[in-house]
Image (spheres, rainbow, N blue to C red):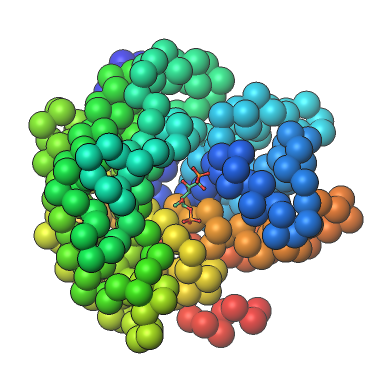
Length: 340
Ligand code: 5MM
């Protein structure tokens, strides 16, 4: 298969009505933090057992079309010796891989960050492909303050995302482009809108300059929401209205799917907000779906807590959240479904 056909076939498998992407690509420090919340040590064996359990959830492919893995998971196997990318494929799920190396402060732009990992990226992607990954993900992180992100931060992060995406497409890996605008802070929803609009304009301008083909990439953005310390809490309808307005102004219609991150919203909030977005989307040109980590995994981890006897209950939690978010992708979720 040539590179373009490869990209198109991966997009066809990932972009499916009523389905979204499970982000299970927490780096070592992040998974250690998540495990600590349930008093579990982050050993390689615990990480292998946990991520095997997620992908072994019976029929999870009903609502999940793709899974983003962390590097070590590509080489992990289940208790029965099945490599995780192969298990994903058996469930009808495309395996992907987080390829960024985390972020550092951006020199010359106090308060802004820049993500590392472009050196040697093409070679790493070829290895990940051999190990069964068909798409990649890279995250740039933007904090909001009265002075951040700066113009330099917005431009430098856009350039990095575009260079990453172009390299991915050159080797037949679909890039997920993730400009994450953080929820931390006391900013208003309108300030969040202003930042996301500026960030995404710059990202798509840079993607265009670098020749990235919009039809064979995915966007993983934040929703437009007030900072988590802001006194007023926006309704799902307000969040949906502002998120859709910003997306219509910044994202080309050629992009096949927009898969939101959850960013620290509770699982029920992330589902209700996705549902409102789809209920109000009208004839939006893109699929509007999810690529959640915390909002899919929080109840699962709490239920599992590292104990083999909790696996069935934990898998039921994952199936439930995936199903509810699948309904939200179709605009068919209601909060009373939480209790079924
Ligand atoms: C923003 O983080 C991504 C989506 O997760 P949430 O739905 O919880 O916001 C997620 O894919 C993230 O990129 C990974 O968890 C990896 O994060 P780290 O911090 O480990 O690089």
